[in-house]
Amino acid sequence: MTVVEEQRKRQREFFALQFQKRLKRSPGYSPLKSSQARERAMFRLFLESFREGSIVVWKSTFVPSEIIYSLGAIPLYIESFSAVAAAIDICPPMLDASEKCGYSRDSCSFLRAVLGASHKDILPRPDALVSTSYYCDGDPKIFDILAEEYKKPHFYLHVPYAAEAEWAVEALAEQLEEITLELARLTGKPFDRERLSEIIQNSNEARKHLLKANELRKHIPAPMLGCEAIDYIASITQLWGSPELVRASKLLCEELEERIEKGVAAVNPERFRLLWCHLRPYYNDEVFNYLEGQHKAVVAFESINLITWKEMNPAKPFRSLAEKLLANPAIGPYERMSREVVRMVRDYQIDGVIWMSPWGCRHFNSMAQLIKDDLRTVLDVPFYILDLECIDKRNYSKEQVRTRLDAFIEVLGGRKEGCTQRG
Figure 1 (cartoon, rainbow, N blue to C red):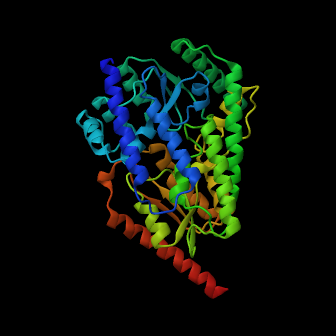
Figure 2 (tube, rainbow, N blue to C red):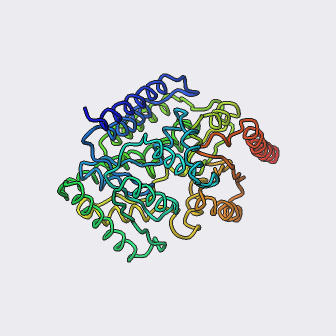
């Protein structure tokens, strides 16, 4: 066995052991079988990236996984490594390592953790890297650094700001095809358009089930806890195109339908319904457990599970993937996201919005106050901007966070009490 293979084998065994420990951990909720299936699929994909002979393509947030699967390669959404590392509590040393190299502590913690992990050499080695310009402007810069470190090519996908323009679709489709063909040449895997069409069909099937699940979640009381639902991250999961996502999403619909039929409530009694915007803290479940367990305020929906793109055409895979990417409401003027927030508030009968605002997420943070002000002109719904890190638990204070959440819940309670008295 080569030195590299022996090292990867140890890394694989380490992460497998940590994952088994995580599965055995007593959660603060009763997980759905579909959620367990999704989590196992994610971790199997991660472990496979360590296997000798695997072709691994590191991708940033919105690079379509479908083009990577079509080449028989493994798409590694590199920020997801940071989430896994935070969940198994190995992130602080990675963050320390990046800071010792001079990377600012107020930059994105997902990317700082990846940089630290690369310096510690605990990442699966990439064969190529692909990043997009939207909506994380830090990704391309970090990917340039990592490409130089690993001596691998970095392909850059420029996403036009004019997301609703026809020329933007054409320009993006051309880039996607060009990058796919370059990856095929680099990896020695001939590009098979029929294979990509099959993968697009998988994505369509999963999309159909996840759309149905989103409809089922409009039910009152909510059939699913937000602390469980948020990990599906439907808008960016690297499982798009895989049969595993099709199976997990189909099972999710079946379980939600069963819960609704049997009258099973995720939170009982359900006092408030919340909309959560952005990701979540991955180092613990305390925030969601406190909201949903202590305050009976269910997170009825999350912005990252919103599906805004239409069904893709397998006969036109690159154009379809370009349209899917450009349908992201975070691209272009902030009003696109604002309209979606208003729609989610109405569709899920939301009592209050929590907008998580990590320090390093410049693009998302820049929209927070704008959307809060916009929402106020359309709907009279409390909107709370919660400063909270996704990865860096060194910045987390349970008491401070609980105090802020208590104040927000008190506002919701006062409004509901006032409505009852007027009624």
